[in-house]
Image 1: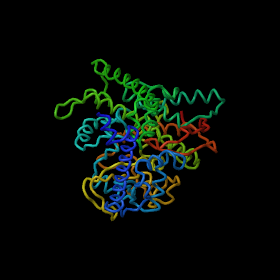
Image 2: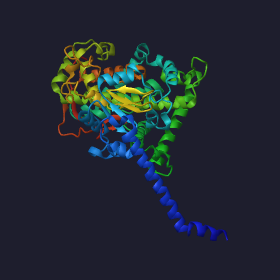
Image 3: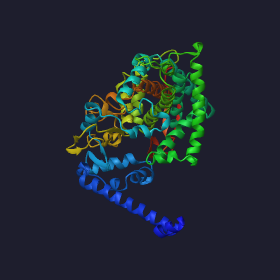
Image 4: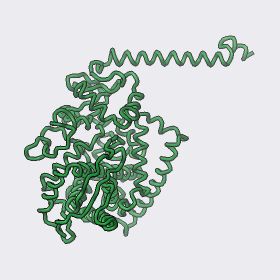
Length: 504
């Protein structure tokens, strides 16, 4: 009787399913039409120029932009092209815009201090939600930053220089062995070498142990960091993928994640022992107590450990890698840096201190220019209220992406795609035009800026002083975005030999 009634009103089961499916389909089509009407007719953003496909296809357009357009992993290049075509404000979604001019970036990040958007939080995945750079809430960020700031102050970082020099000496020993083994000249992957040094500096200054990344470029912790970059990047445009447990990409990532968590558990447990305590950033987190007496919880400790790994093992190492690549490709600039370094005092090991290096104008200009060309991830913010940006009405809640790649390569720079250190010299205007933000700006600027500069000075200056480098033409120099800007090949080869006129 019941089945007869169902059949009478709804038809057979197959017909019922078809009816429900068609009803659902009609509903979604109607919903999509309303979405387009709102986006192109009602929304204040309708007047913002840009490619309409970002609005029509939403996340799918972003997915295509990131993984397929221009060979994949080049959304920064596409955004830069769109800004050159449409101007400093472009629409990149139904409720999202991108800005790139120095004035607008300063307004959003410094003057008005827009809050970070939720995009910044899910971009870095569940294991870095409470990391300092991905926290959205301003007061939560301020509280944690205040606690961590001592370890990253100029005086706090200066105490780590001997440890950084120890890593450099390990790097030098390794290079010397290879040069001797190859009859006075070796062919090396300088990109991987400085990445290994950066990882070991992070290990010895934060974790209290070297990861031996110079001789073994892919230890488990580095493998985890690299996997994290690829995983987060590959799922950034469609984060729902991260919630499908049986997908191989999730299974493999979570295996490595479990090993990394186990390592962190062991290190944190060890640091809680009185005899194992050290004066470093990890100890600040392990023993951390906020001003109100609340102790830092486990997630915050671990998320910031992973955050330090991401920043130290890749961001700063990438800056060193790009600096070396550009100098090796420009022998005139390289020679000028070496002349500057040759006039510097050295210690008994032949090392130049970072306090001396920071006063060298040309090397500093070369490093800044490499940072300009070698950084690319957007700064994600959200409009806290209805505002006007670049003459366009922007409603509250709109995601405002500050396109750093376009900021660093916009028309306000002369010959923006060329490596020209002089733009940061005495006669240049690179520091004045407000379009240089390798460490972000405002209240959310990189807390590790001093650490990064010291690391770059210690490693790069001492390498340049001791060795001659020769470029190997014809290499793949294509770059892509995996959270940070990187060489797609993840290597850069060069010839290296001792300088004959270098002081001991």
